[in-house]
Amino acid sequence: MAAYNVVPLARLVEQFERLPGIGNKTAQRLAYFVLNMPKTQADEFAKAITDAHEKVKYCTVCCNFTDSELCPVCRNEARDKSQICVVETPRDAIALENTHEYNGTYHILHGAISPLNGVSPDQLKIKELLSRLTDDTVKEVIMATNPTVEGEATAMYISKLLKPMGIKVTRLAYGIPVGGDLEYTDEVTLARALEGRSEI
Amino acid sequence: MAAYNVVPLARLVEQFERLPGIGNKTAQRLAYFVLNMPKTQADEFAKAITDAHEKVKYCTVCCNFTDSELCPVCRNEARDKSQICVVETPRDAIALENTHEYNGTYHILHGAISPLNGVSPDQLKIKELLSRLTDDTVKEVIMATNPTVEGEATAMYISKLLKPMGIKVTRLAYGIPVGGDLEYTDEVTLARALEGRSEI
Image (cartoon, rainbow over all chains, first blue to last red; front, side, top):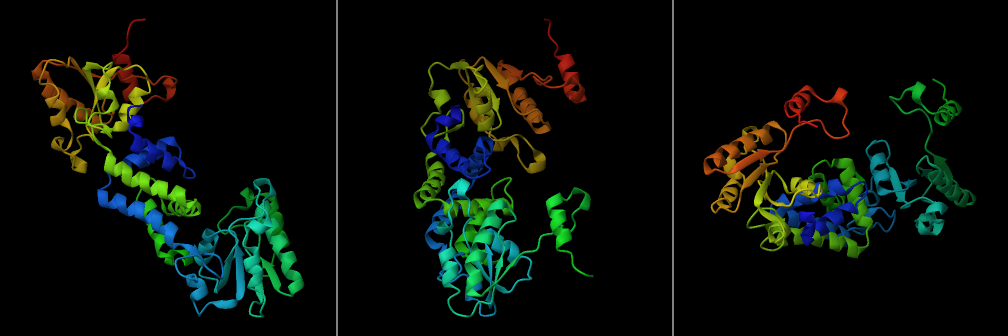
């Protein structure tokens, strides 16, 4: 209890506890760590938080986070503007970037349709996606939402909106993960892998 | 890579990565979480960090963290000033406080002697402990450093300093943890439990 009466410390513990996946013990550990940092480092940390909030905004095209008007991908002349890969979060876009296999652009929905969690389609960046499809630049929209119920529903919802516009809508392949084990692969995934088999 | 080029965001990820037990993936998750916070909450978080650094200092008696001259324990008239429980970190003092069994005061060493990690006795708050023993108030010093090689060495070092002063020095009991399993208790602990057995 002793240290809990130290108000600024307790407040810092509280702040860390709000972060996802951080419980009370870890929050305490982090707070003491921050307290033991040199003053300049702690100031940098605090500044990084306010800076991120002040300077980071949505890219006016793809809704990814950026500190200028366009994100690095949308700004890049070498990227293929005829493909849009639709993902739920910026972290999904990073994961796809890390494959070094995709040269098109992205569109970040910032979530997935989830009636249970009160997320309806109009809370996602779907309008922004539709406004990118008004001219004939875009030839293909790749749905790369998560392979979950919410991700599936979102992919279905958007593809139904895009079909009448005559745009090709594709979905990431389902199948066994590379390096995975057939024995431990769930039946649904295995069934999808079978369904999507290709000639070798 | 896309989002990595967003400098303020990358900087925030970096800051989180510096914290103990937080890797790159978690740091990203936390940074995005902070970015999605309302502005006021992010500001509170940043302020909690700088505040903790500016307002929290060492208690002039026991070296625990406090926001005034004395920590809540040293300030408390009801605490038994004749007992000092010596611990390595403020978190150890909290753990002891949570037992609600101890009514004496603490002394925080802020570490343990560890030549391998370059921590020598003069880097710990040992001088501050000795200066508390100059009058006859203190009757007992309880060594509650960790049951590790470093903790043991520290306890031995301090007890050797205190013995000539005629002060009773005690050490926390070793034994099987309550709710533990004899079968899975290591031999050293079991030997100590046997050694320290008491009549029932």
